[in-house]
Length: 228
Ligand SMILES: Cc1cc2nc3c(=O)[nH]c(=O)nc-3n(C[C@H](O)[C@H](O)[C@H](O)COP(=O)(O)O)c2cc1C
Image 1 (cartoon, rainbow, N blue to C red):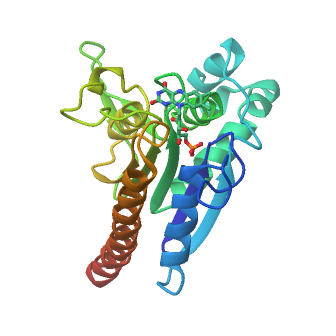
Image 2 (cartoon, rainbow, N blue to C red):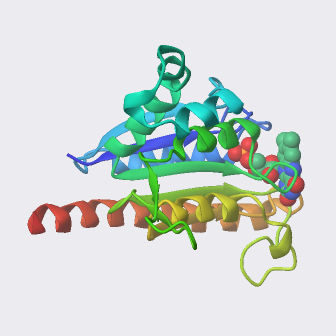
């Protein structure tokens, strides 16, 4: 049974459409979850906003660069949380990332999660040659679903704020670097500036897209199941 890992990162804990001050990405994730029910997938959720992973520092970087069989007990302990987060990613076939745009970037806990799961020898490796050193992503055959929400509009390709998008675009770049080729997007733009009827129309499109993404996840798994 394929595993779908959902990462929540909005600081808002409620759902946007139910409460005035809730989160669109959380609501999108919940709709995707509802739509995946009965489709033969295992769902796992991680709320990095509620439980932020530790920040990386020199001890983390040095431990992660030390070959596994040479690590001290302190270094093994230093990497324990990261190892658990990496294991969760490696066990998952689909990774759904709730991606609110905060100050043109991603929420700090989501960045901390990413810093913990990008691990030499576990999620990427380096080429043999020293120069140029090429990174090889190790996350093969996984799909990443990005649920993005932004207060203003124009951050997507071709938009007037495209250059300012260091949010979902950065998340995609990280996963591409880790070897992911399959991406799905659901985007709610302009949630703080658009008229209510415009937001309503966008929400309707998002709901349809979420159902489509759920179907694609199911189809992808079925196809892989047949091949294996
Ligand atoms: C701390 C903070 C920073 C934000 N920064 C931006 C920003 O730089 N650009 C933008 O368009 N919207 C910005 N917004 C609006 C959010 O992107 C928008 O409310 C989005 O829906 C957040 O996702 P969520 O609904 O899942 O919490 C910001 C909101 C917050 C709370």
